[in-house]
Every structure is written in structure tokens, then in C-alpha cells.
Image 1 (tube, rainbow, N blue to C red):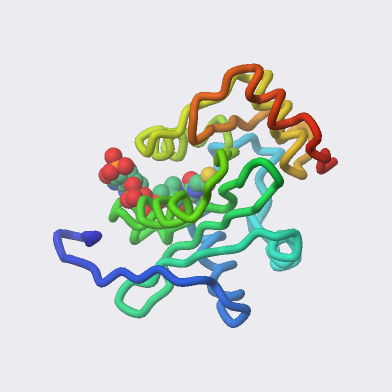
Image 2: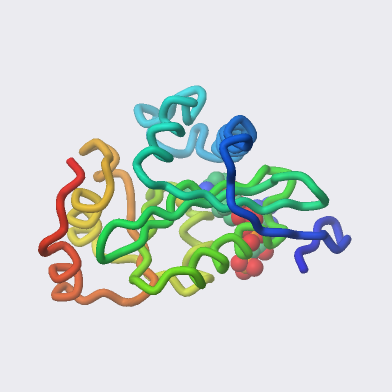
Length: 188
Ligand SMILES: CC(C)(COP(=O)(O)OP(=O)(O)OC[C@H]1O[C@@H](n2cnc3c(N)ncnc32)[C@H](O)[C@@H]1OP(=O)(O)O)[C@@H](O)C(=O)NCCC(=O)NCCS
């Protein structure tokens, strides 16, 4: 059970449904305030994610799970199947609930449901997020491998490739990265 200010929280995980759209967008943009002034200024947008972008991500196969605490949706995390790998996409917990174990629950929930190598891309500057994933056993891939993986499995601009890192659920040798990439259709 997660805890907040010393009190036990009633935590439930559930799939996100269309009626949650506005709340998911709000959670993402509230939590993404952590990036303000941290990620490169040319990558920051206000709001960080528009409704159109979120709708497009869902249309492109990002399936969100949510964490409900005492009846309130407070955290979301998505998974996107990309052939030989699953991507964890858009992990956000409302600021008041961060550090309570919600993100860990969501990550565990998505990892349990996957039987493929899992990749996560995040900003190089988001040190707290990198530490969070490393504490859960994810390992950073090399800069060159990260660039190749980002270009293959994500649809992000070149500037985002330069300023992001990739973590994997298992140690990936250069050969293993090549094997994942081979035969996979590039997103962009
Ligand atoms: C990254 C994020 C999703 C993690 O979710 P979370 O619910 O805060 O994560 P947890 O509480 O399960 O774990 C956070 C870890 O940091 C520690 N922590 C303590 N205080 C914290 C705080 N105020 N904020 C975040 N983490 C804190 C926790 O003890 C925990 O350490 P552990 O893994 O060794 O137990 C969430 O903090 C967030 O939305 N951050 C802003 C947006 C972001 O960076 N998203 C990641 C995109 S890739």
C-alpha cells in the first residue's frame, strides 16, 4: 500500500477510458511542470502537452493505465507496443502525490503485463526520472544506441533525440540493439 504524509492510501489501478481524457491531460500538464526551466528551453511548450498531441498519441497506440487514490485519478502511465519492444510513454503523477509510491505501482503494473524488452525515453536533464527508473532496474543504453533506438521506435524530432536518453529493462549489447532495430520500421 502506498503512503502519503504517513497515511495509508487506498490505491487502485485501472485502464484509462475516453471519459478520462481531460483528467489525463490535466495530470500530464500539472506533473510536467517539473520540466519547466530544466529541459532545454526550445523543447518546453506551454502547455507541455496539447489535447491534440494527447489524442494523437492515443491514436498511435499509447494505452494508458491510471492510478486511482481514494477515488481520484492521480497518476497515469502509457505503454506503446512497437514490434519487438514495448515503450513506456508519458509517466506522470500529480505533484501532491509524487514520492508516495504511485509511479512505482504504475511502472510495476505495466512491466508485469509486458513480455518484451521495455524501453523508456526521457530527457537527459530529468535526473529524478532517470533515478526513478534506475531504482526499478532499468539501465541506460549508450548515447549512440539511444539515438538509433529513438529514431527507430519513437516519432520525435532530431533535437529531442539529442537531448534524450533511453533506459532499457535489461542490459542491451550493441548486437542486441542491432537485432531489435533490424526489421523494425522507422517511425520518422
Ligand atoms: C517520475 C514520476 C512519474 C515518479 O512517480 P512517483 O509517484 O513520484 O514515484 P514513486 O513515489 O513511486 O517513487 C519516487 C522515488 O523518489 C522518491 N521520492 C521522495 N520524494 C519524492 C518526491 N517529492 N517526488 C518524487 N520522488 C520522490 C521516492 O522515495 C521514490 O524512491 P524509491 O523508488 O527509491 O522508492 C513522478 O515523480 C512525476 O510525475 N514526475 C514529474 C514528471 C516526470 O518526470 N515524468 C517522467 C517522464 S519519463
